[in-house]
Length: 166
Image (cartoon, rainbow, N blue to C red; front, side, top):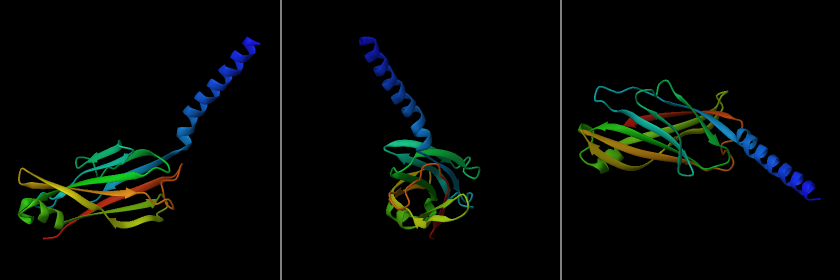
């Protein structure tokens, strides 16, 4: 009897392990992330973009390679935060408040077939820091709409664009 109980217990553990290994593959969403534009004559540009879930960075792209894009796997049906940092020449802002006021970052998310999921939403600015004649303006967008959460097995394109108001 004890051998049979051990066999049942081992089968249950093996089944749980198999489920734990396989289920995440079916519960993933794939993002292809791009940021548009290059530095202007003043050095203004998108400096960095990152994607977060549950306080864990899922992917990061910097100005060095943002036109090439990156591929990021995220969990489906989980709040997804997009962070973006823009580098703004200090000649267009006299303070961190001006830098926040004069900068806009937009996010657009589509399915691979081009169908729009999130149509050019303005991200929320939350801080600006001054360093080496530039303001680094940070903004975020929380994708938490249950009607269009990241869906398992789906690939999305996310594009970032910034504007500087002078």
